[in-house]
Image (cartoon, rainbow over all chains, first blue to last red; front, top):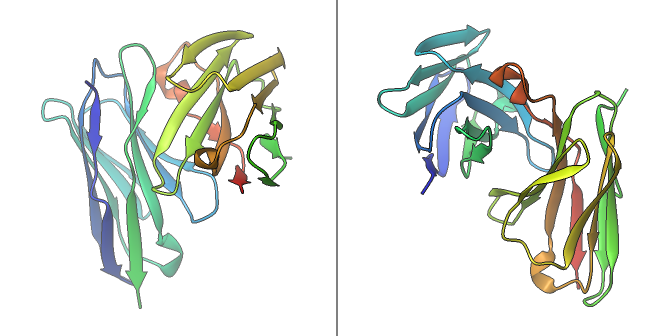
Length: 109
Length: 116
């Protein structure tokens, strides 16, 4: 079966750095997406990785290792507004998006 | 301009009723989706439509029926509502095809359905 694992919840301090991990086992791979979802709102796109390595976009970076079935989302200089759920999703060989359950990130002052 | 819109935003109804949720996208996308997000926040795909054809139909009860009058609209009709149907329902759309990067999905604001 297809499976995506993420930690359920993480806590970090304002101004710090946090890394949210995602491991996947899917039938094929056509890319990995990270989405951010604030409470009561819709998920919004953060990043897309299809090649190994690190993609940096401002305070957010996303890393992929296809051989390990592993990705992480790195958030730097954390702000209170970064408190949200972060969803990992993999596009499989049938071009279906397989979603993880999401990681709830709590930022403390 | 709103890219993906849904109505209503909130829906409170009694068990056994029939209700519909509407979705429209103005992005010119080829594929539209319905997701259910329960209290545990897990996003579960229910249906997707591509060029008015159903291409995914996950194991959802047949009380749920999607309807797509055109590429820009995908409505969700629910018959005989049950308590377990209470959740947030998200509509989404994507361009698809060509590059995988275009499978990025754009979500509507969600419809919070409460069945009493």
